[in-house]
Image (cartoon, rainbow, N blue to C red; front, top):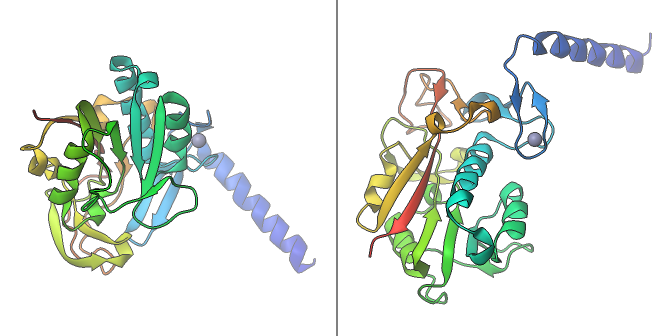
Length: 256
Ligand SMILES: [Zn+2]
């Protein structure tokens, strides 16, 4: 038997095993591509997250929670009349926002060929006050040392009737400020906890949507073994019990 034939045989056995165990694994549906079935694990330096990704379009937990929250907000607002600033845009939601909103502007801290503006949210005087109805920045604030300055700018560039959606990864029991940038955590400067958004309550009214408020058919929880923290790769995270953790999507309305 040739090496190639052996490899094909091994690959087929792996496929058969996956198919057999698929019946025992939880099934979910993907709101982006319509896939239905078991979801795949995401394997990162910080640990493995079972049920994290749709195996067809590779959306993650955060994309699905945020999509559901935007569905809820679309019931309250006519997005077609609103302008949105989408920071650090991810394709899953960028495609949707471009179609839904009256005006779509993308922005990023680092230069990217596919964005409209390059901005530093902590010093973006080039954007006039009251410029946008909506600011959407997913998993951005955990990268910004002076997050209060960034939040003040979000409030400034939002119209008084507008709102911001600023979710961060909730990875600690309560927020931990890292003493340095942790590259193995994608360059994060803090490990947010559920309390993270409290620091912006002087600037915004805050409505929190959690996994408990959302439809689990789309798999809106974060499955992760957090008893093992801190680790070499996540040196400042704090441990927590349980195998399934809540995600959070905050909707911030400027205080007048
Ligand atoms: Zn999908």
